[in-house]
Length: 617
Image (tube, rainbow, N blue to C red; front, side):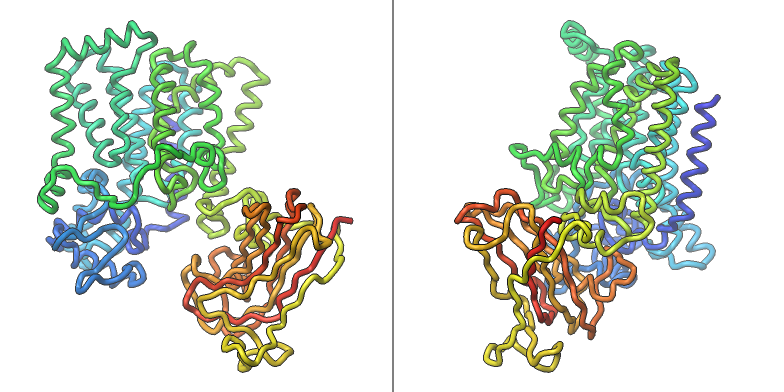
């Protein structure tokens, strides 16, 4: 009873958080993965241009012109779809669109009947429909997960596990703030698959066989890399090589069942195969073009523990799942061999992807779908400590803290205070449990360098001043200047590097270099990757050992200390930061270089570049 109440409680929390974040008004207009999953629906049922997408894209451009990258002749080009001969192919597969179809039709019917919103696939009801679809499948997944857990664990353990997974992980983020992504749908399918698999081996009923085929097929359709999901029905309740051989024999002897599962998988994927065939003449087509895997250089450590969307960094509550693996044999022996085999393979594949930090998320989003599987060792750990007063008290306190951290950091993300895909330890530390940004957190976000306590260091020497007084060079201007006659105009270039050699200077390891300059913007640059930067780079034997880059425009007039601020025109501002001298900066081959670089096309004016040496008290 408590576990069913937990699902009701979770539903209320999700709906309340969803209404507070209110992100549904712009969900489909900005593009991204969500639009890529969804685009099949308006292209098929409204604009009838699934082959070239031009009307579908044009309508999106009317809502958000900045979401269109460029034009290829008369053809609109976007990140989420690419040209193939005369066609335009959606990069993403159509599994999420299929699951969202009923919700899309309700929104379309509402728009056409009421005339309150345009029936164009992008107005508010369509955005809301995708969000409701996400919430619906998430709750369905939790419902089936409850049915699995209650079979092997107590009601209390099941309730705690469900609440922890739903509110203490980034599943909460994808169900309330960033709806429409594939992961909550996959979460539901994984939960149903585990439920169907467990019941299949006990009852051999046709409905469970169908669910296995449908879930394996749909999971693979939504994310083809999840094809390893077939390991769940194959390895469930296996604990030895003898049982593994028996399982192989079982599927061989029951070939009709095996064929039925494969047939359902193929039928589920057939709409996608037909789509590719009609546009490319190939049944199977790699729609991600030049994006791919590097299996020789996976980023497993960064993916699990790093501050750029690291899994356990931003979802620490699932450490209890890792601990629980040691106790599964006592509470749920059926799943331990499966998880021990499945988890490393899954981790290896997802962190071999070129974009291993998986942008547009909070924490490691491709881990979300396997949370029903990780709920099993999680519940095993809770069951182990349940009757141990000190351990359960400590565990529950940790769970509550991790839930709070998850909700708070989701709120920080909503407010633009953090952005985990560009995170680093210094920034994480500077913003931990903070409701407002600071100048120091802005510097940490850009540079990854924690700023020193100014009272613990002291100014030693002015190493270099560059006032850019040169009337000959065309970069030197007089119409915008500080207290002197000239300033330096940076036009998609970099300033001359200022160099210091370790053996010929008084700069020592663990000292601090303070770099500052005056900055003026003639016009705004809205691409954060094109903002001018103040570089401080240390070389050891020709190799970079420390590289700190501070974005300059975003520090002009940024009174809110927002990481999403891009600057202010027609105003001078002095920008500065400290960089700690690395301990390896000691030999005659070691060089410190400082310069200003403008990678964009918008003009930036600088003046009074200063380099100072500060030492510890």
